[in-house]
Image (tube, rainbow over the protein chains, first blue to last red):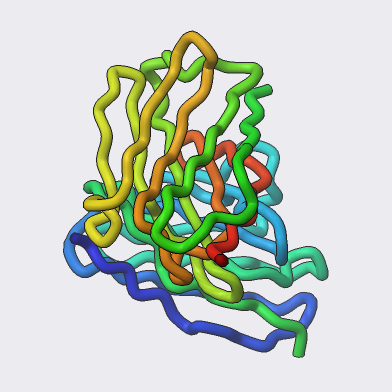
Length: 107
Length: 117
């Protein structure tokens, strides 16, 4: 099974800051990587798929990159509504697997 | 647009079987474009992928759960279902059904299941 290691597990930051979250796969997953935002008590929301494709209707301050084993989610100029927990998910091979999550908190 | 809605009991006794159904509206489970998935989240913890089913009935499950999980599809009702046998406290979680295409793009709101006698 493929293991996904996400870092950091949490970070404190301010509105307007740039945030980068990383996800590392235990083996190459090409670009079969997606990113999700989750707020407390709510279902996750797809942000990025295929490692770098922004889901339709979402703001361009979210971007994804990487291929193989190393991936990043970047939020340029963090907005108040972006404080949430973020997860990566590999869909290269079943069973699929999530990263452990990164909680983005207000400093 | 496609919407998913989970349903099932909120409390299950230890050692019994958890059964949940996901009803799909605005789309069809028989679409060959998508897989239909179950994901769970224990209280205060991260997301755990349980498994998925394709409309043909082909399934794939989490390695840690595959001895206890069955996911099935009912195209006549436009639903897919989850059965998890021999539940313990560790199976207490918020359970989500979801559509998997280019990313997991549509999610149900989630249903909380507590394992308790």
